[in-house]
Length: 459
Image (cartoon, rainbow, N blue to C red; front, top):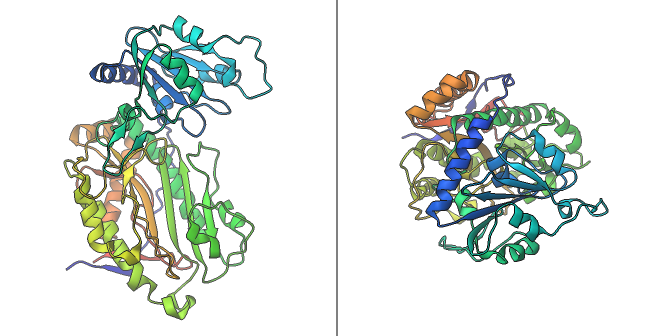
């Protein structure tokens, strides 16, 4: 019977990505066509997408535009060029986007204190852009209200009040977030080859940064000094860098501080760019002897069953597999209350770190070609054992999509095939052909960060 052990593992260095994939105008035109088909399927004659710096993904999917200091609105009709409304600074910035749209200036989207000399009522601008009375209008922000059993309320809005009220002046308005974010067939749940290549490019960078941090951190460093090892290059982040040690580490999402890291500290670090996130957690230790006596069985008690759960996650995900099957596989190893796994053990990832999740108890949602998924199983023991964590992304791709990635993105495909070989030959994790690891540290779990040459593997 296979089980997890701590053993010597040499983590390959896949290098930094060289060629940056781009999303061109043809891709955005195809997305617009699919969006309009989806609108017609749902009986919508108009769709408005709201976006801001923290909630950019649906808007960027449709246009390539990412608001910086401001908000932005996109109006999509079935028979006209979409219209993007932006503020004083977003208006010129939108020229950088590759999507198909016309621009309109609406200065209330600008920061306070900036000029409003060209101010006109939003309702007037919407009418000039083609919105008419009696339309059924979908409004997509960044989420909606759903019950624990997945029932979605189309009358619940998280977008600004002024926008909801302006649209209600034209007709019936409903929350349309699921057009993009449904956990099985949302438009952002199923990705093209070019988009997956962009995710792989981002994941290569995030995983390399985390690798550098883990290999370079030492007791006596401040958390800030440890993070300098990541050597970030300015790529667009999806989340703040989270890194903490000692008493704050169990809180998970804290940013680094000037705290000095000590031998024996619990420690966690995560880094996310748009399309990827990687996280690791463990102890600033060389062996179990560096830990308090009561938890020197840390590897046996927590890390071993956790890694077995993660290996089952990787080996279970595949085309046609239900989210419930993935959930059951994971919880067969870490279902005991001690582990404290309460969030979904896996979710969809896109430009935002969490889109939605088909993985939950009893879920009948099936995993499909084009999905990008995060292996994200988080124990929260609430004890001195702290936690352990490996968080990396994969893509699921049927043969046609795999061939497309290999043909048009050979650099990324080369890294993917080498990662698959490493996971099989060194970590003992047997992936299905459709499972494409996107991270350069996929499956690598060193429990003791002062001994990164020893990591978990299935034997």
